[in-house]
Amino acid sequence: MSEGLIEATGRRKTAVAQVRLAPGSGKRVVNGRDFRTYFSREVLVDVTEAPLSITNNSVNYDVTATVRGGGLTGQAGAVRLGIARALVKADEELRRALRTAGFLTRDSRMVERKKYGLRGARRRFQFSKR
Image (cartoon, rainbow, N blue to C red; front, side, top):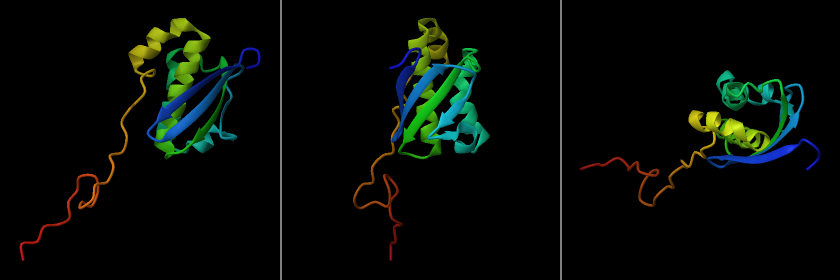
């Protein structure tokens, strides 16, 4: 790691995000693109910004993230966890605020696997009496 660069990993569903936090002017890049164009929905932009805004660090750090796997929602959640973990590495005093907001807890919910004899994980085929 170079001077002032903080790295952390975030996961959500099947998405994995490697986040780099560097002191800067508030630039955000995800997979080489601006995060507002990458996460096209405003809700997802808010999800990724949440740890920075709750700790009043929106303009103090540049964020570079590499995300693989999953869909956009899972990727946004993974980036959020990665940013929160990196912020704690940068300043241990932010841990309490991030923990209370629930940003340091890995969301362990995963898609339930499909079972044989069923249409999905739990959904059955339609029953016909005749």
